[in-house]
Length: 267
Image (tube, rainbow, N blue to C red; front, side, top):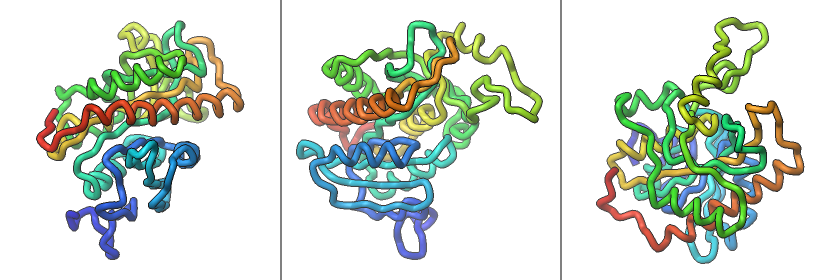
């Protein structure tokens, strides 16, 4: 591993992982709880490490080596997780399993959005890629997620995502005690055809475009907030959606085994 991302113990600085600890299929979430839910579906678990917001669990699912990894909230910690994971597994398929708010009236809470592209409004990826680089999902991952959702009989939508830097002003919520709120933000994004708001997807899709290692990325998010109707998902429905989200990700990984990432893969 590069000394720039290595701790004194010789492991990745924040993940505390080493080469061999992380599988080629990496299913990620901001939430540690969701990774616990995901890893409970594994057939075996061979590795587990936790530090700060980062929980890494590696095992197998239907004989497929898989890692579940939490990244914490937002783009900055997600970049850290991706960079360090690639030092331990430099041929990686990342599938984000997240939550989001929907912006179009036909998308309701408890449904799923598969991102084929994302707007880079998180102000982090510009450190890694010029603004003309589009955050585009790997088409094989996108198709695998669509097929997985279809096979499971769940309602999903595929389209444009907006990745934001913040949960409040960045997503059109007024933060009490602060000025600068843009009340036109949501309407402007709706006109552009944006399906949903979240805080990490563009990081995966952008880094996959410029990474010098073989890397591909895509993702699906469960709708926890309907921003058109101001409806928030109830706790029981959220639990059910998280379970489905994890199963969609695992089935997509299973489908992708037939379409492996080559060592020569470049965006």
